[in-house]
Amino acid sequence: MKNWILFIATGVAVFLLAMLAYSIMDRRAEARFAYQPQVEIQGIEPRDSIWGLNFPRQYQSYMKTGPSPHQSGSDADRPGDMLEDNPEMVILWAGYAFSKGYGEPRGHGHALDDVRSSIRIGAPMEAGDGVMPSTCWTCKSPDVPRLMSEMGVTEFYSKKLSDLGNEVINPIGCADCHNPETMNLTITRPALVEAYEAMGKDINQASHQEMRNLVCAQCHVEYYFDKTKPGKEGAQYLTFPLADGLDVESVEAYYDKIDFTDWVHPLSKARMLKAQHPDYELYSMSVHAKRGVSCADCHMPYKTEGGQKFTDHHIASPLQNVENSCFVCHREKVSDLVADVHERQSKLKVANQRLQRQIAMAHLEAEKAWQLGATEAQMANILKGIRHAQWRWDYVAASHGAGFHAPIEANRILASSSSIIQETRIELTRVLASLGHIKALDTPDLDSKAALQAYIGVDLEKEKAQKANFLEQVVPKWLQEGKAREAQKPVRSINR
Image (cartoon, rainbow, N blue to C red; front, top):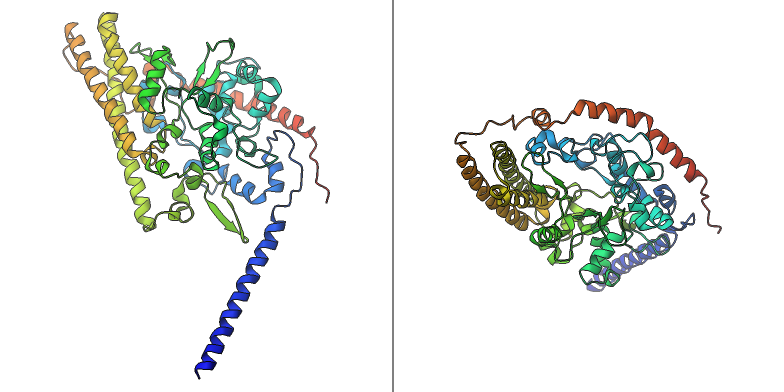
């Protein structure tokens, strides 16, 4: 009897091993033919549809970052209005284009549509019109490295945004991150290479896992336009201020040292800084970064389809794909993990909103002090406090994932900002009292975007009318001319 049991068990084991061997051989055979290239990708090919012929799974997943009526959140067809939700920002950014419009961020496939439709870029009707430089295109399209290669980096930065509208027609895509010959990750924006050199590092020595951060850091990073770069006169040269460190104080000190300012606030007269989106800097201070987790591990996890493992190019919140993103390391319930992230984000948002109102009040109080005859000597330290407090608030606010990426560091930054603005407002109170103002300040409605825009002189209806004219008359021409140019570029099939 025992012999029969042993015989049957052995037969079952052999059968299972045979099935496993067959499955492995089948998957190997499938893998051999899975990524057979169909076309040659030559040079800097900005059209994702061409790359998609060779890499259909990646291309199909990437297309989910663009317009779709079935998506919500950051990929919604209409971005949320951040100024409507946070009206005080209108005062914080008075005199700067962000006070006119600030939409909720969306997926990479929306990048160019969001630039063109943004009220901030104005409505340039002819090439050479408008105030925005071509540098504003830098992170929005793989047409940018193509243009830099064709015309030169400095020459690209020396144009107006409207000069290149018909050249930049493909949203963020494959050629932004991949070498077309090897498919290795690559850096296509010189600003990051130059920032590494300024830090005394060689970006060519970065490991593959580090590159899974750095291709994102090309764009998800703090930056400014250097208009005085030696040998680059006339260009608004994209520069990352990382030479002295990635923390908020180091970047602040960098700007103070070179006496850089994005704009002078028309109410408070403070020389202001506008944080962009220091996601890479803040993430570098996180527990995930210390454990070697990359941006792609969470935002572009591996997935399997038809027996093939590949990177999901639907670059989105990990909470949309917890099983593939978070569960590689974590073992909580989905509901518990998601609730934990939401709790951190919501607490940080509340702290942000309280702080932005305090800074808005400081601008209005400074305006009142000037009206009453305050001197520059009285206001010097106050203006420095407003500059530094708002910079730190914005450093966190502009990094939309800060509440998850680095919650401890983000809260530390907000705490320092809160301390600075409180001390600044106390000093402002003393100045106002010395000028005879000892009552509460009469302010516009801080809960109304429309009221605050009217207060600072923004005629939004006029801006919207001009924008509608631009979108109707200019953008279709840009796209038509760009498509006609691309149609002249042949696509070569690979003969087998």
